[in-house]
Image (tube, rainbow, N blue to C red; front, side, top):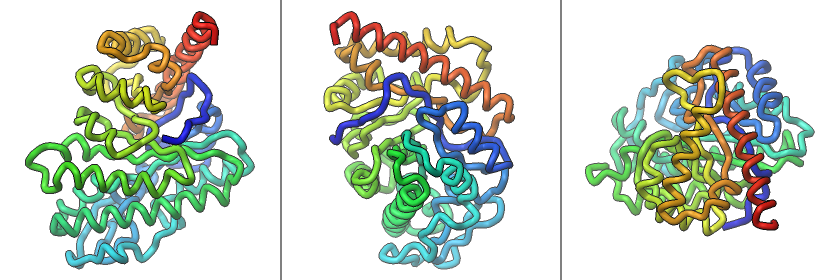
Length: 335
């Protein structure tokens, strides 16, 4: 695993924002999470900015409708040449382009995100593409789009180190025995996408719910992104081994459903309780904190703009507590 050269106590976000004004959305993340701003998608601006629509855009034989849904014109789509448009210049990427334009000249890191091949494969399967072809096309399409995303980021902000997450909500179901793709093939599919990204960026893998984290980590991400209470403590051995290999965890410590409150205390206590359980199971408490960043649990498109800003504010407050505690622990051990 390549070393991750990022500051301690980072806050960032996951995927979508509720905004319809791309410039306003870009300005928000660059101002509020300045150390690691995340390029937002804006599905309320247009249905084609939804994660499946973005991923399927340009696949030969698949039409993306205005509401973001898919129609298959040709189920025999070709995994060797999946995309008629590999670029990020189309309608689904307006939010991304606004962010990259606003980040021009930046020297600090930026976070980018794209839909992973397992989740795209499930979407293609659900609209009638046969399973084997659906996942083959998805893998090829995501790798092509990843190359275009990285090229666009390098052109817009050549001095900005890049962090790129695959968003894989489909992993909550994909490792079940009844899933149409074998577990090893599922992991290989993700691994291939991560391998395309890794020479050019720090790689991350986000899943918004419980899954087999030990299997997921076999795909080789450098950062694992997961919500609190999604099974990490129950799979402490896998998390501990990942940290020992210098992997990082992006903790979704701020819920994106239910009441939030106005102060970070409850959120910090919940995060600390999870870390306590992991420490009791064998995780190094220093690594848990030094190799951590804080995020919302998931995207924020279903929130109002004011609510989204409050989520980001609470994320920042929890991250500052993490930074303070990490600094204190390093002083204690003489680092």
